[in-house]
Amino acid sequence: MSHIQLSENIFYVGVNDRRTELFENHMELPNGVSYNSYLIVDDKVVLIDPVEAGFFDEYLQKVKLILDDRKVDYLIVNHAEPDHSGAIAAIIREYPEVQVVGNAKTFAPLEAFYGPIDNKLIVADGETLNIGQHTFQFFMVPMVHWPESMVTYEQSTKIVFSNDAFGGFGALNGGIFDDETDIRFYEDDMRRYYANIVGKVAGPTLKAIQKLGGLEIKMIAPSHGLVWRSNLQWVLDKYIQWSSHQSEEGIVIVYGSMYGNTARMADIIARGAAESGIKNIRVYDVAKTEVSFIMSDIWKYKGVIIGACAHYGSMFPNMTLLVHELNEFKPKDKIYGIFGGMSWGGGGVKTLCKHAEEGGWQLAAESVEVKGAPIREEDIERLYDLGFKIGKEIQ
Ligand code: FEO
Image (cartoon, rainbow, N blue to C red; front, side):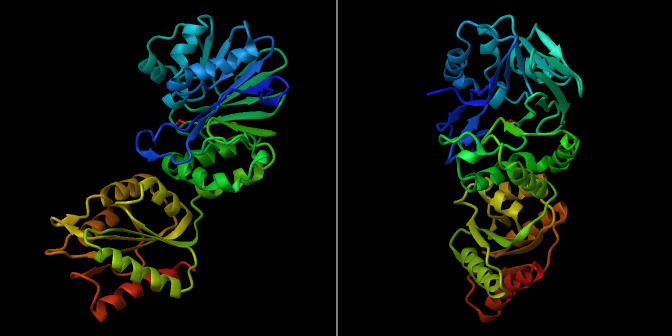
């Protein structure tokens, strides 16, 4: 097998992680994730963004297969988060002379995680580093995804090493480049990654895209997911769509239900939405589907109808995380609806309404609260109407 090359002297040396069950220890990874890293061999040798600590041995073996006895001169750290920076301490032990390249904000988090780093090269926005045939230019993109985030542009090959931006979940299944695979397979995992990691900083992401707009870019090489060389406009359009909160026609209905009554209400609402003409309707039980999947669909679709049964005067407990994420990430351009069962004293709908007020949800219809099960004609009608009305509203 030959080395994986982005250009004659730029190599892919990333790894696949199919063993971590939860990314950041809270988001499921049914398809794994990749930690992409890049090795540039010139008069000097450069590594861009290493990998998670547990993959250091595999990573180093890949690097050494290319370098043999040559040493790494520079380690560019676009982002200090441990899914990329985890192997830094081990790299410095392996190559004690290596200069770690970061910006004014990079080293505080790095040294907080890994201890003092002696050999630093601090670069400013727009500054360049030449290593022979290759010249790297650094652009600060604060908050995409942390304050110290930057991207590195290689001027001769016109490759942008974008770290988290343009990344996605999903280990790379043989195809490393977008044109070696069916990109539609990765789309859902990319959006889930976006909605749960980058979405909170959608504004800075849009700014970063505008900032890089003046560059001629031939390839986007992120630190997770596919390397983009043939479908740049596709990935750019997706990122612009998600960052500017452009929703598609569809409704996500999420419920929390102890004995199935609020679940039955969700089905009635879904029927109303379907009869209004909506074809994309996704119904989720918040206790069964991990929240990152629900957030991903909420990011995509315009309608969001949330239901919770009562639980000790408040709402079904598992709904708390979703509501927290919604009010934290604030997806815009949404039309909301609220429903739920009262159990013995109510509280689910009341609590959801409180969160709606705090989060500034745009409610398209009156909330529907039902005593017990949805078995009375008037309750069934109110639930059906909620789905129908929101369905009509978003078309
Ligand atoms: Fe992939 Fe923000 O780290």
